[in-house]
Image 1 (tube, helix red, strand yellow):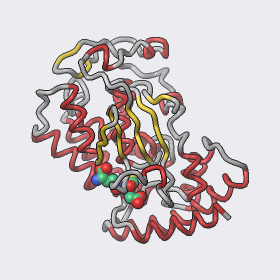
Image 2 (spheres, protein in one colour):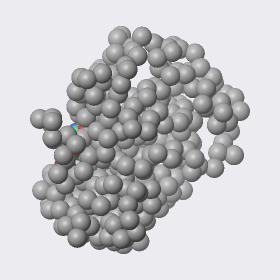
Image 3 (tube, helix red, strand yellow):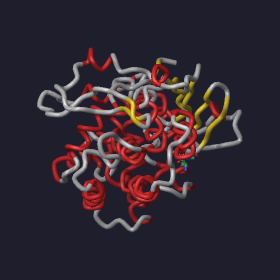
Image 4 (cartoon, helix red, strand yellow):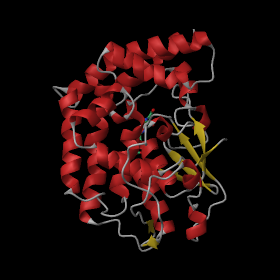
Length: 322
Ligand SMILES: N[C@@H](CCC(=O)N[C@@H](CS)C(=O)NCC(=O)O)C(=O)O
């Protein structure tokens, strides 16, 4: 019954929600246990990096961001040497905890930021039906980040505050970076749900991927997978309409091309190293990269090179086991 009620509550919640983003990959209750594990295996492990020409991380610190130079692709051992932010900077929190839905795009934006900066964090998966894990907070959305006891909310605000702690002189008003960060929140996130639940088989693939990592019984997994996929398939059609999307794949490809055009031939929007806009785009696309929609996107657009560069730049997840 848990799965069934979860599916119903997902449909209810989705009806109630006003943004596509807030419903992105939002699973039924049973699935919420599963998604805790979405990134415990680093998505990089799923990528064949054998033919990547770029890379990797040779670091120096200029304006605080890490520098990347050409070198042979980093081996896992080399990546493990990635210095934690605390080794480079006075920002050295004792404990960072992220309250999240595993596949929420806003949460994934924050995770990309934390991973890139090597800030270690614990993850608390929030149950989307009762949100009991965040009932202590007046803020009812995720992500919420607690840094040494201080609550930060809203993904862009969280990132702004953290980047200022890492680099007090960081200019958050640089036009290009600001414009593309806003584009992620106002446009890119809305294109995702209609794509990953576009067909019944894609909706099943999405939920299969989510639930495979789960820590629950076979029964719960099946209910979550089929119930969640069915609910989200129908919901995604509504979202498509709400955001005036006629062809979801074209919308995804269009967004990817728009992003590549914005790069203007540079390795990253931030030029030699990713800036906050690079991290935001990467964060929201990372969970879909290995789903059919993400594979199609890489096959049919020019975004693949940048994406691979970002995977190398961001490196291993800094997530700790809770
Ligand atoms: N502007 C917020 C949006 C956060 C947001 O909408 N989060 C969704 C999950 S993706 C949420 O918590 N929705 C409310 C709910 O699930 O009840 C941010 O950038 O963090």
